[in-house]
Image (cartoon, rainbow, N blue to C red; front, side, top):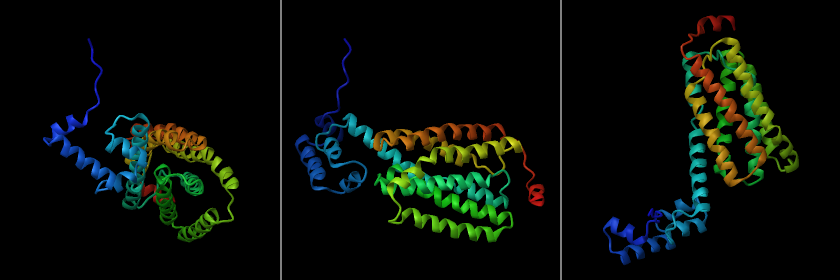
Amino acid sequence: MIRTPQKPSLGYLCQYWSVDCATCKDRIIKMAVEGYFFTPLVLLIIPKECHDEFFIKFNFFHAACFKLALSKVLGYGIVIGSSMIKIPQIIKVAAAGSVVGLSLMSFLTELVATTVTSAYSMQKSFPFSTWGESFFLSLQTSLLVVMYFHYNRRSSMAAVFLAVYAVCIYGLLSKYMSLILLTQLFSLNVPLMAISKVLQIVANFRHGHTGQLSFIMVFLLFIGAIARIFTTVQETGDTIMLATYSMTTILNGIMLAQVLFYWNVKVNVDHTKKSN
């Protein structure tokens, strides 16, 4: 006869820790209720109800709370990772002194999409764990745009870009920006993100290489988009965000395949610089 696995009981945990059960129970519940060292950190990730399920009732397998906790951990993991996700790309461009193989229009369309996503999510009061990467991606993509102009000897265009971008951010975050209009702008994210990825994919095929495109960045974007599908379903249920992440997962997968396919292709950076 096959036995159904039992959830670990408090007694089992106390035995495992070699602590008297009554003492163990008193200490843990006191820590959970009174808010000792770990409680504030836990409450940053999960609500009080799930905190009580885990640390007072010791119900670590509560389905809804487990899914929410997993979603939060994934979400904050993506946000933390996204704060550095394009750093390898930035370093690669700076080291080569070239933006060969990269698409300016791809950067610009992605920048519009991530900036609008940040503004929309702030207006809707979505948890930062569900959209924080858009904020960091906007910062890093804007830097790549500046570098693109700089390495193509168009520094004046970089200054114009920064000024226009600052005005756009002010407009999106202004109290005069209605949620209805912002939602309409956000609905354009799906085609915008598709265009940004397709432009880079087409550029890769046309050049016969991926140039300064970073494998690490593309890989992390691919994994992050997959995780975002789960967190969006669990925490916001926003259909536009879900469609956007589903589409970017597919296109990031194609870009990742291109990086691997063109891995051994050599790029003549000096020749490209002269032609520019």
